[in-house]
Length: 459
Image: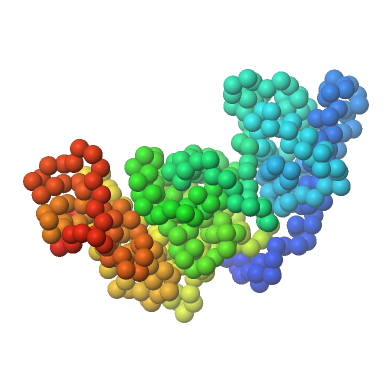
């Protein structure tokens, strides 16, 4: 491990106790003050465009002040992510509290929303002419059908490609009732692939991490999975996803499943989901133009994520997860962090059962559970693994089974009750006469038939 990684780990060690007590309060206070000033100045400039032309000298001082605030935030954070969520405003992970009236905040949010923009990421400090151009674009009439895409292209064409426009955000805030789910879990799961692609592309382009879009989609996954069998649904959707996103999203979904079984709060599940989304980011990085080899991907991932300035609990959990998610349960006399132990189980399970073109999975789903169970305690946390098995059952979703009736079936449910632990719902894929059903046929093994053997990949 090179000096950069060792230095990063030492820095993590020095700040871990502070992180456990809460966020870095000094940094959070500075970010909150500078962020409030920056947001107020941005609001003021947008208001002024309704009265004056941007070439009016009245804009000179406010533009200079906005640039100074941008520079101050850059010195504190690196890349700056201004995010509007309903009547709240965040700068990076810190919520901004305004002295302004709430209707002023809502007005600024609405000015961005007409362009279908919910957040702006600044990946470098803009000069005064660039700030003026950005304000001009935001104050202009939006494109009727593709406002955000059109505005982003206009910025890129003008040389402001380091400014990224984010979609409108919808977070579930503390004390708020559950988000009404308009999209089913499958839709949220599919849309997550695009969020993962954007997040990874930004890191590969050497930009500072922006975990907010990842957190947003993770919260949606958590909400929509509460009343369904998410292990089964994720497997149903898996084949429709692009290859690069399949493993990441499956590990995220299974990690949340384990975390929920462990009784983690929704806020902690959100942190866990973000950590899982980033756990293999090092596999996408490059060194000297070539993909980072597997044995160095944890170090590459750490180097990428540590660029987000400041130390707060959620960030440190992500960093430690990247470092530790392949480590056994008893690594050099110390157990990895909780998130790392959870993701280690989900990661290995998906790798062993992941379908590979022309080869199939390494092991069947039941055999994977058996193999992993054989090294519980040394490789995997025994309690967490038991929670995992309690959720997916003895014949997890995706298991191919031969029944006593001669039917070939695929398991399509996790554990429905204590009594049905080894009796899943199954979809018939071949009848005893070797014909395939023309319509979906489901058999409940708690009511009929029985399993005589597991069909393994070699078969």
